[in-house]
Image (cartoon, rainbow, N blue to C red; front, side):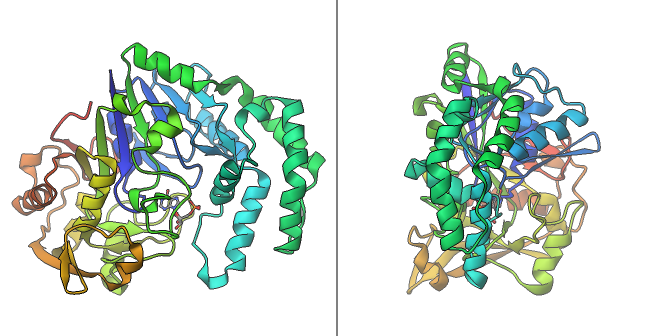
Length: 431
Ligand code: IMP
């Protein structure tokens, strides 16, 4: 048995989808345990592009069981669209390949509406959410106003939940935001239509996971977003509403902590972020644009299409990510993009109030005062996107990788040099 957890080390968009797809070939079970369709995992196989939002990317590999765990928030309308899209691309969608936790909470139509209305209310001072209803759905889960997949499957229960919750939501929509209330019957009927399609997939996934563990299966837990977007450890309040760090696997997919065998942190060879919030190594103007537009896939959000903010690699941030998730190895992505820059800077520490800090501060209110301390390393001009062996990388690219490993005291197990599966350099086995 082995359980590999993948965690985004930065602000999401680290290229987790690509790495997860690569290591999926060894997994029997692939799970999602947090987030919802704010995520967008882009995977290219044989020239075809797949973007996964809610469904685990193990669906691309035959003979894997894919589980959407209880910690995920599910927009049933979007999930159905995603399943239809995958099916139209030849992916087999059956309950023997996909299980959905009945304990997972739904993103209801009013959650989407409220997310948008709240961002609008905040004017220019919003969080820059994806407006997919993620925050409002998690708020209701914690406030015990949530509606779960098990409720969706039960007509009587669904109506009861809606009768309890919708009047309150409508009152907020109308009286706080001046929005248009939702009709209970219409909402109920549209959800019932979703239920017809989704019921066959809904089950007790705690049972499925326990059996998989007992049978010694290889389980891959697919993290969405990244460490700095974690509700507890991230750059509060500019973050998402779930635990994106390794602990989220235990509460979001019933994996007992002692069963985790490896935590693979996925980090870009530089840093990006979308949405608002602090970003110490951020670059601007042409410098940012050079990174944003290099390579076959530019730095634009897979879910929202927004241009990503770009900056240099931040080692204090990575040390923090390693610390809070117990990361045991790194998958380094988009190394090929750095062919486009004349020289590479790496933030090795922060200067804060006269002190040198090696680790990102938990008190993110101090981030504005953190001055990055940079080391400059030589770049390489060569196109490295076809290289599949570490020894064949230009010496300067190898040095860059060694520099990161030595600074972080952690192995870089995989290196991605392009979006396709075969554009991956394996240095150490993950499973
Ligand atoms: P929410 O998750 O839609 O509530 O958005 C909260 C913040 O997290 C915003 O800054 C989003 O841009 C960011 N975010 C959410 N999901 C992702 C992701 O998958 N990649 C990168 N940023 C994300």
